[in-house]
Amino acid sequence: MYTPGPTLAELSAFGLTPEDVEEEVGILPSVWKSFTIFSALATQWRVGASGATGLDYNVLPWMFELHGVEDAAACMADLQIMESEALKVMHKETK
Image (tube, rainbow, N blue to C red):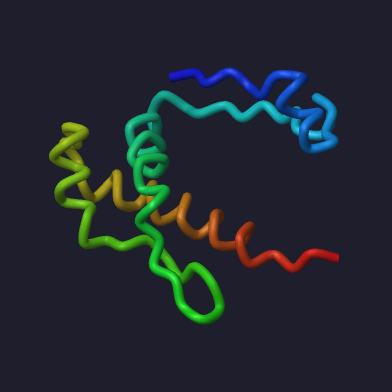
């Protein structure tokens, strides 16, 4: 799964250059399915007064079935790591 980055026109509409958004991220094949599910959960964050608090785990059984996950425990462990790191980024104070 590859999504090309924004075009120069799209970047310039926001006053950005390619250098402003250039970042390459590699996903290990061993966690690809977990990453795909994490990406699909983009609209499933629980949110409180202080912002996101975590993913809504109620949708996970359906997502695991939909994506053919055979080892739900291992996938859940991967998702919790990604969730934890995402929360750190979301709650990082800007200076």
